[in-house]
Image (cartoon, rainbow, N blue to C red; front, side, top):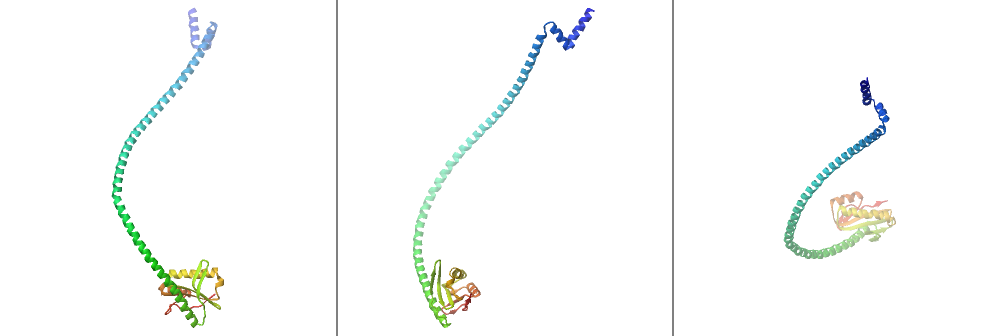
Length: 261
């Protein structure tokens, strides 16, 4: 019966935690067990922290491995760039050498161009002198044709019963070659050696500016005319449409027209 009691006691110690604590406390081991339990908890906590630190070290080692790979790649790239720079230096030196050779070849060409330029300047100066003579001649011809135009027009208008004193009309920003007034009629004209569409348009623009800026210079009736030696067919057609009288010393190119309004 005693042995049976022992087996039952040992079984309770093994299987019943509260019974085991009660017996331990009874025999003075309760405090020791609690302390051991606390130490187990702290030990387990330390083991958990060690696991975390181990994971951290593993991550650090992985990053170091990646950084090592990156550093190795950078070194390889630097090696390649150094080789490329060396080749670039070589190419630049070769390029400078070729550039010097080209400059040397062009030096003679430049010297020849300078000689040609001096010769061209001499030709240009001669041409300028000729142009100056031509301009003076054209200016004289223009003055002559303006004077001729006024003389011919005075005579033609007198034949038609209009006594008009014709002269140049100079106004701010505007100049009319031929201008005159007789009672309710004003004469507005241009004198040119050759009349084309562009020169006719310029003259029409002058007449329009005169009408807009200086209406006091106009009369109820007006004769708009161009005196010329030669007129293009297109200019004649346009002048005829607008009622512009074109004439020359030997006769009319378009009919004499009096415009009203």
